[in-house]
Each structure stands twice: as C-alpha cells, then as structure tokens.
Image (tube, rainbow, N blue to C red; front, side, top):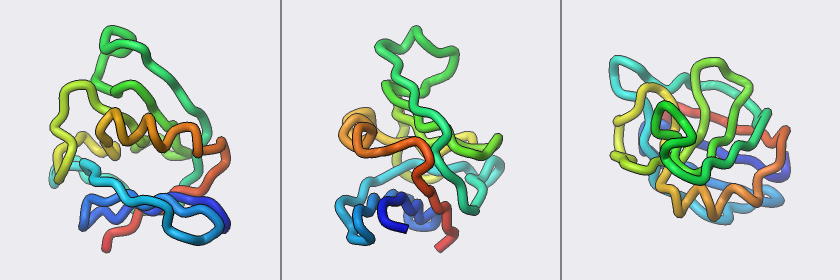
Length: 116
C-alpha cells in the first residue's frame, strides 16, 4: 500500500497515509455499542458531494466516501455529534476535516477499520 486510510475504532481516530507515511490524523465518530462499525479491509468505491443538508434524508454532511461495505461509509456531519461512539455504524467526521481529506482520496484507495 502507498496511500491509504486507517481507522482505529477503539481510539476514534482516522489516519491518512501517503507513500506509507502518516500525513494527518483526525478525530472521528464510530458506531455505538448497539450498531458498531465493522472492522475489516475495504476500499473507496465512490465519492459524493452534498451542498446543503436538504440533499440527503440523513446527516451525511458535505462529503461521503462510499466504501466496499454495505454496512459502513465515511462521511461528514452537518449537526454532529462527531467524536466517540456516536453513529449508526458509519465513520463520522467534522465537515471541515472530510472536506480537507476528500480531494486527496481516489476511488480504489484502501480503508482499514481496525479494533485497536
């Protein structure tokens, strides 16, 4: 792997790597105990942009990275909460963080969700 994302589910941190070097780490929200974010190896299959909260029925924020999993994705949040175990299973980021990360992500990029 050269460029990839690792999400540490226990620490609620997303780390972005370029050329196998850490570029930046972000706080994230992960799944609640009743709806945990599934650990595993995925890749980005699509990138979506939403210009206002009315564009989606649920709060996906301004950007969404669709993963090769039918159980989770990476997305922003218009209304929060973001940090901690707060989501229905997705990885939730602050809008400003996912907007910073979004242009660096390519379809096909690996995403690893690890438990600790």
